[in-house]
Structure formats: structure tokens, C-alpha cells
Image 1: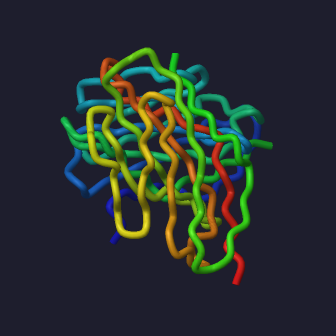
Image 2: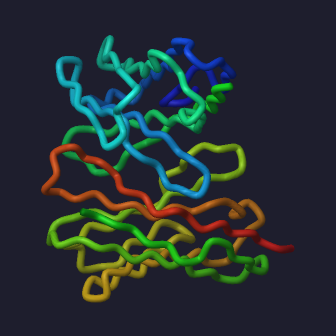
Length: 112
Length: 116
């Protein structure tokens, strides 16, 4: 089984809809991240969390919110989706004191 | 602000040959980490190799090696003995250790196509 899982893997939604992307991990890491990837660009950080009581904004947090339900679960919500939020979304995890981030398989989101 | 530059949007390499992917970075900090990730057409991001700014030896992981030239601020990835399965997009990334967000800053990526 994959260490970092994301659901759904693909989603098509309409402008104005609320949508939630979920991430779960079995790596036992305390740090979790949400990134988005747009064509021709690398990944950009949306939100990150160092533990269940710690949530921080990344460089492009506008239009998004997150919830850290447990150490192993970190969800990303789009309160009112808009077309320019069409992207590939990645969840990542890392261990405290370690450098490497491990990514989930990604969620491809299309907002019509 | 950090910036990662990958100047090669796409490269072709013959199977079994080596290929070098360029990465330069811009930071005023002395303590940072450099990473390479592979993204095949299926979309997942796969960690390949890491180099710390204070590491004296170039990092190696199997067929991957990182040619780290600190004074030039470059961290090129070398893939030796290319295989068809190496066809993918490759991203260089950096993390500034002074930053508490552990954010990875990514380059735009290089697409590698391995020819049989």
C-alpha cells in the first residue's frame, strides 16, 4: 500500500462548488503539506501543518482552507471553486528534523 | 527570495547513455538543501536525491548523482546508463533552512525522453 494516499484522484466540478481533497499517510510523519502544480510551473505551496494544532499559510493560500483532523490526515478545501484553481494538487509529508518530503500520487482537479 | 532555474525545457538521450540536467539556484543563505524529483507521465512525484549545502561530497543514489558546485550555485543531476523508464519530467527544488515553513521551492522542470 502507498504511504501517502490522496482522494479523489480525479475530480471535475463546477464554478462555485465546494470541494474537499483528502490526504492520508501511514509514514508516521508529523509534517504535512499541500502543493499545486500548474503546467509549465513547478509546485507551489498552499498550506502546511507541523502537527494537528499547527496550520500555516503557504505562498498561494487565497481561496483555500485546510483541516488537520489527525496526525495522519490533512484535507484541503476549496470553498467556492473557480476555473483558475484547475491544477494538479499534491499532498506531501516529512518527518520532523528531516529534509525530504514525500509526495502522494496527486489529485487532478478541473473546475468548469 | 529563493529562485530555482532549470534552463532545459526538454532533452533527448539515447538509451544507456548518461544525461546531465542543469539546475541553478539563487539564495543569500548559507544553509539550505537541494533536491531532485522525478515526475513520470502518471503524475506522481518521486524523490530521487538530496544534497545539503554543507555536504562536502556530492550525493549519489544508484544511477543518480548530484554535481554540486556551491560557488557557482549549481546542482546538476546526472543520470547514468539511461533506461527507457527514465523518461519523465525532472524537478530541482531547494529548501532554505532558515525558513521555518520547510517549503520546497521548485524549478519549472526538464522533460527527459530516452530513445531506444
